[in-house]
Image (cartoon, rainbow, N blue to C red):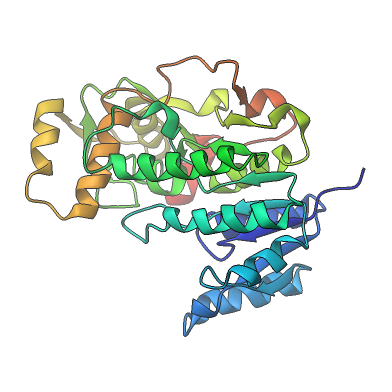
Amino acid sequence: MGKSKVLVVGGTGYIGRRIVKASLEQGHETYVIQRPELGLQIEKLQRLLSFKKQGAHIVEASFSDHKSLVDAIKKVDVVISAISGVHIRTHSIGLQIKLVDAIKEAGNVKRFLPSEFGLDPARMGHALEPGRVTFDDKMAVRKAIEEANIPFTYISANLFAGYFAGSLSQMGSFVPPRDKVHLFGDGSLKAIFLDEYDVATYTIKTIDDPRTLNKTVYLRPQDNILSQGELIGIWEKLIGKELEKTYIPPEGFLTTLKGLDFKLQVAIGHFYHIFYEGCLTNFEIGEGGEEASKLYPEVNYTRMDEYLKAYV
């Protein structure tokens, strides 16, 4: 059997463009949707043209034109959605229901990977309002996929390093502090940090793998399972300086929710579950899951000491 043909929806976005790159690098015939809604977003258009130079096929389709989606899907074997689910950017997870309908009608897709790439929404039924909307929306998409009997793989990629490692998980910044740092609780609960290109590499490896069919794949590379305190320690070693630390108790952290913009309330709720509950690492992977670094030990993933060197 040859490699699957891949369609990436949201291919110009933050994780989508990395998935396109990984798909091409791993030898898949790769299609990327160009939506007419692109309008005057010149950076996204230029990214599409760049993909074309690298060998990708650009196909026009729109969520407001069902037939165009069906026609695009019929060209491929695998559909990967990478549309945004981050409230501080744009939250478009619900649009994927239209994609599910088109995949069901096309009838040829052997694997669908919806836009998840973060915390496993199936484990977040207890999540705080209003942040739980992210998980509720993702679960609604899962329900539609499974009711339509569409073969799937769900990717739980934990924390993108660009958002959480480069900042040492400080809110309101994407660069590491050099003098003072805030820790959630005592900073000892473990989280999992991944370079976004590694997320894409693991994602593409799953699409032709029978071991990942109808399963959740958790990205848990062992060396990147770190507490916030350990992450800060790596940075301190790199810059040769100890930072002044402030520890934020959970009750103090949650009081910051009141009166904030909706998008910030969503983010704060997610931070709470990650750093005060340890929701990324407080469970064992069960029968319905697989762990990516065990499936694909050949992937030389980026360790966080190497990742943070770029910020020195």
